[in-house]
Amino acid sequence: MKLFEPIEIGGMKVKNRIVMPAGETNFHTPDGGVTDTLVEFYRERAKGGVGFAVVGVAKIESHFFGGIAIYDDKYIPDLKRISDVFHEYDVKCAVQLWHPGRYEISFDPNRQPVAPSPIPPPIFTKKVPKELTKEEILQIEDEFADAAVRAKKAGFDAVELIGSAGYLISQFFSPATNKRTDEYGGSIENRTRFAVEIIQKIKEKCGENFPILIRIPGDEFIEGGNTVKEMKQIAKILDDAGVAAINVMAGWHESRRPLITMLVPRGGFAYLAAEIKEAVGVPVIASHRINDPLVAEKILQEGKADMVAMLRPLIADPELPNKAKEGRFDEIKKCIACGQGCMDMVMQAQPITCLVNPTVGREVEFRDLKADKKKKVVIVGGGPGGCMAAEFLAKKGHEVVLFEKTDKLGGQFNIAANSPLAYEFAELGKYFMSVLPKLGVKIYYNTTADAEKVLAENPDVVIVAVGASPLIPPIPGVENAVTAFDVLTGKVDVGENVIVIGGGGVGCDTAAKLANDGKKVTIVEMLPKIGADIGVSTRWTVLLYLNEKGVKMLTNTKAVEIRPNAVVVEQNGERKELACDTVVIAVGTKPNDGLYDELQGKVAELYKIGDCVKPRKALDATKEAADLALKI
Image 1 (cartoon, rainbow, N blue to C red):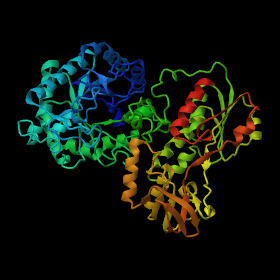
Image 2 (cartoon, rainbow, N blue to C red; image 1 turned 90 degrees about the horizontal axis):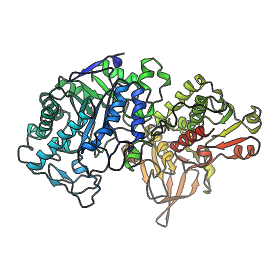
Image 3 (tube, rainbow, N blue to C red; image 1 turned 45 degrees about the vertical axis):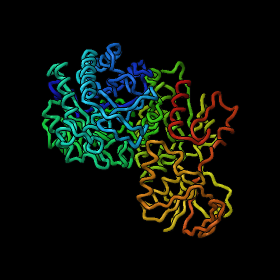
Image 4 (cartoon, rainbow, N blue to C red; image 1 turned 120 degrees about the vertical axis):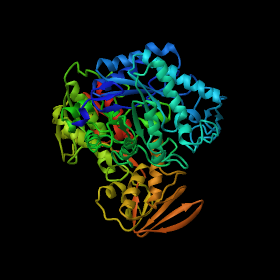
């Protein structure tokens, strides 16, 4: 595979073409200090076979909220702990140097952010930034260069400038945020001057042979911003200035289009890398939604890029590179682009985790799993929680038997995967169907396990993970409706004009599928907002999709009666009738707890996890499964 061919970046020899790009983990101390958790997180990815890793973001000033610290020499020894870990596994590494500019969130509430021009951002603090003076610009350039010196002293092989996502360097690049009339504004050459001067200063302080990479958007996807046409010109200037490689991503944080959710097809922005590659002579790295090594390989084979960046896929499965190299593609735990454990957590300033990999941030706890005493464990239910428990318990050396009532693993994920908003969810069940038998788990498919079947296995431990069933609300005429689960699985015929009662995640998934099938859809939701249970990083893209598909969304609206061809709703104290062909119920689920109650007192150890405790997110189910596996 071309993916595993070595490559050279500015004289630095890299063993393969898989890049782990920088990304916030919140595993650092509040001031940005390195922690054992962060070091072990990186160790797992280094061990997994990645070729090149970029650490960060790393803040070049002390007052920025977020990021690891590189603004003072006192952080050099701790940063060296990270570079040492990568070098132990023959991985080349860089630090990404970061100044947020107008996106700044500060520890000091009275601090004014700075930017090329005093234009407030539409997101984050929305504060009007101070326009930088020439002296302040030169000072920030020096801060970048001094930070690069610290990175070199800490043993890193290179640095990367973040000139993307809407941070300070990209604010200078963009005509939407740079309205200056001096030598740092106006023409493309002038708008690129800030970055070029930073590159020159780093070279002066670190030497010509210390590689400098830069991450840029191939297209800013903001009104009045740079398109790929202008970014190609900027990339050429940066190449001429001496950058060693260009990492191409898409958009800014404020772009109003999906950039990393499932609504972006796999490798959907590789075309931007291909465009930039036409303009430059240095290696180009493609980014965004490359969750499969075969997709990555295709990008390389087609000459769209020289390397591929995979952050969330390496969070989901740190061993992805080694598994791909050994041809174990069916054993790769793919990132499903749900955003629940990564982006949603980062946006709430919480440490990241991962729905498909609950060991994230807990690498040491889950390393070298071994049970003190082998036990026979029976798990009922092959959804995300049950399967995750089975995987960890089998790795610990327990004998594991799994009962699943359908013909495949994945539980409600397989139902949700029928929606265009959740198709990647099918990957998790496929992974478990491939991996669990290899770990020695005995799976009974198409088997509804009752107490008798469970007890016949003579288990030491029973884990009930049977999920939840659709909640049927006490609305008069509810017998005239069908459930969202039956619609998503194609068990019922649906007319042309559909009303979905319930605008949570399941209701949105169902509405999206129906709208995609050409149906006229209305969501009726009693709460003030649609998708209240959907993560912050994804919800807005779901609403965007539903709007684009013409789905009508009624909030603060209660369904009070369901008739054969209509729903009576109450809105602002008024009742009205909405005509339709089909009514779909999507008001939530209720726990399936009967089996657990039946087994009480009949086995030595009895547990329940996931939705059969109470309906929540799959992230909660897989975390509970992992926690329980550590105990047994």
